[in-house]
Amino acid sequence: MANVKFNDITFRYGSNTVLEHFSLEVESGKIVCLVGPSGCGKTTLVRALLGLIKPETGSITVGDRVLFDAQKRINVPAEKRNIGIVFQDYAVWPHMTVVENVSYPLKKQRLPKDQIRERAMRALEQVHMTEYANHLPNQLSGGQQQRVAIARALVVDSDVLVMDEPITNLDAKLREEMLIEIRMIQKRLNATILYITHDQQSALQLCDKMAIMEQNGTLCQYGSDEEIILHPANRFTFEFIGVSNFIPLVKDGGVLKLDCGEKIPYSGEVPAEAADGGFDLGVRPNDIVFDKDSPLKAKVDSRIFLGSEYNYFLSVGQKQIRVQQSMLDARTKGVADEGETVGVRFLNARFYPTQKGAETA
Image: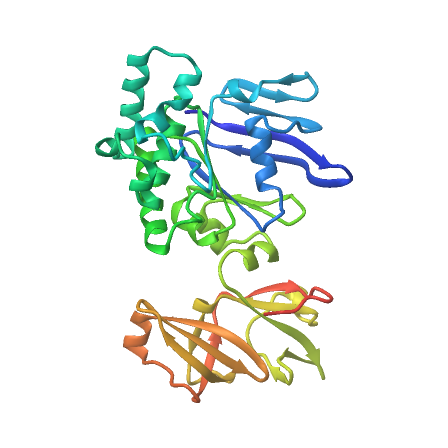
């Protein structure tokens, strides 16, 4: 397997700029999840990698191979780029057996029949589907069909495997199983996988690295899931990855207060730049703890048990915030009841300039 390097990629649809001077390097043997809101350019970037569209500027390399270079006028045809692709809708032929589906790319290469059969069965073995080789797709579950699609991508000995929303159509249990399957396949093959998704939860479960794209097509942050959760580069990353609460922080009568419909004094630490207000306090639900001695009070609107944690909605003044309490914390400190007034304390709070016209939540 090989690394993938996008350098200074620009692409426009007419007057609409989708990607502008976009650069990213995907390390060899890693699963990198490209994450961002719909319309941010994820699919456009993948189409450029596959050779389905031609960028205006920049270059794309896989390992030592230059697949595209605008300046040098290099543009390797899509069929010669040696990149496997797994689609959202599986795209398996309903009239072909499993082994025939997996063999199809090799037949297009006009390889000998015995070699095709051997490589197809080896690919099916990698996804634990050899016993279903002679089944038709309608005899398989959604997860099994997706494994067939992965085997078909693996059969051509691709340098890179691209997965474009591959588990969206599966139910929750199958999605969980397929994430484990994809990780196990990647470990066995030491594969380089570029995984495209808008589902941040799947990305956090699966990836070695995450590339966060903003709505305008720029690369916001690239790093491990831990780096991105604990050290977000900006408000967009903090807000997009994970659940977040935002409360405006204002200066009123010389005192810092939380603007919750009513102004509530805030005694927590703030950075120097936020000392005069004009900032939003951002805090994750699992960084809010109950503390009876805290001067900041909230009313418990609702409490939901989710098996591994409790999910609360609290009212601070007229502002509703979300709190998550782990089972360990619930067992040692107790739970809060609906209608109860509790003290709350914010841990690891972050402060971002208030966005004019933006609604904090």
